[in-house]
Amino acid sequence: MTSKKRKRIKCNEEYCVSCGLCSVACALAHDSDFENIIFLTKDYKLKSRNCIARRDALSFIVSCQNCKEPECLSACVSGAIIKDVDNTVKLDSEKCIGCCSCVMVCPFGAINIIEIDTGEKYSIKCDLCANRDQPACIETCPNQALTLEEF
Image (cartoon, rainbow, N blue to C red; front, side):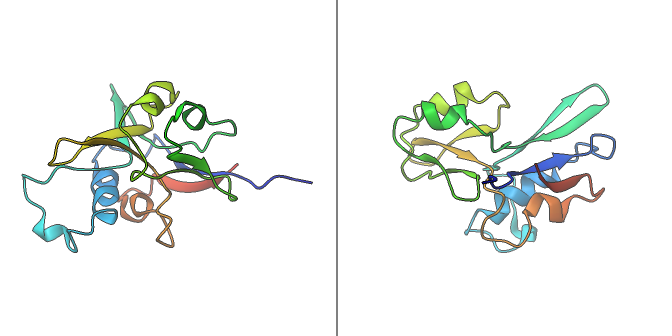
């Protein structure tokens, strides 16, 4: 019996210019308050499930790698993190208690903590835009530096 392949977003560092559009696209794709980027204001707090890492001339997207043995899943005390039948590591922010255990153990730094207006904090991570045909970050990248990879 063969196991299903896992998916992750792969970044070609040669083409990534750290413009940040992937993070903006991710935040907007997951925010029902905005229908059009034209209405984005300076007060808007990005709730992106990815981020850009930069060092000198090198830049790339930091996103969930859907690990075979996810440390975040083991560390999650609330049961908010699961691995589904497609081998995708999912995080249910509604179940998250904001303890940051998953953030501390992720070897890729791919889990973010956000704070909402009430002061509550919870974790978010890439879900490969499960509600879309293709992840928003890949669709939006002007240099086509991002691809969806099966491994």
